[in-house]
Length: 353
Length: 110
Image (cartoon, chains in turn red, green):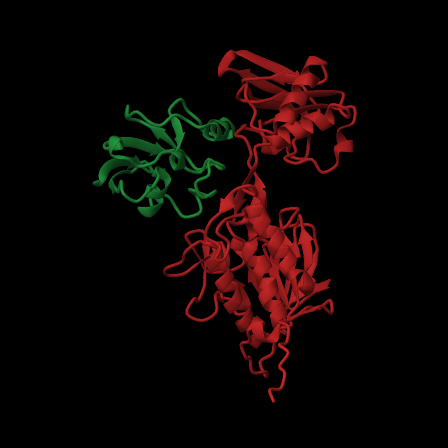
């Protein structure tokens, strides 16, 4: 069981900055995120896109902002449960919460802050009628253990970096690799495209474009797929495979949080913004893009503000007998849990005769 | 610069005729959002960077539209429910030339 003061669900910019504000109040944080790395949308969708409305940064790449936030919170030693999705919440008699992930990791904290942005990122699934029937029986939306595909016949669908990268990797692992894409052009890194071209020339990757997978067949496990070229059914190909891996990117969904008994409005969690961004369940807060209230703006800087106020309220909840006094970092500096201390240098004052 | 009229059929099949300003540097996705013609969280997920297809729409009138960028082409090549007249709303900027544009929102992705 992982225990902490504030359990933050979502490791995007808002969740990360909440670690800093909590740290100033000497509160420890642990973050859960469905993605394998921190940064949320900024890291997953647009790491190389510039952002122009972060105060003090005329221009900063989304990925750089995440790197800076990680550097800023390092003294507060946050814990991370990455690659797992917060699945259930249970409130104990002592008022603390137990949040369990889809992989069974349990976390306990007196305060839960949902900073889930647009939700957890889940694979975009192609519309093939019996797709669900073969999930985990030959169909997978991500590759966790490449060795599973050794000497197997694998068909990958998609035209982005993931599809190209895995086609390249599996060319040396699988017995057959087929890559199917709706266009002749790929939108991956140029060297990946060239590598796939080379593997195609060597006969190590079977490339079918423009085409798409339209059918799956098999008994208990997947046995073959139907590939349609140029939208012409007359050109359908039946390809025997052991695995079909559609890689069409990720799409955010609110996910299991929607079933936690929180008041939801317009796909977002309603909060009390006049006070502290608390939800209808005392002790559970929602900050950043995942929440809604009158006048809500989905901006990173608004998420930072909400994280700050949430932490003050969380402090009072955790320490009801202590009086909270707001402090400026310019005065008090930053004292990390790792023993580090940052503070303004003291001026040397000489006596004047 | 004045407002233009755009006809938008939402995902329920309801037709809306809306005024779209040409002086606010808006795109079609933002117009749809501003009139709340699709639930929040189901359109413009990537913020308008042609990195999701949540604002895909079918262009029904014969207006001359800006050519698709490589990013838009690539995104549409991976999107679902794509038709010949599919475009990403976030890539269509509102100009006076688009007065009378008619579009239909593509279904939400599964």
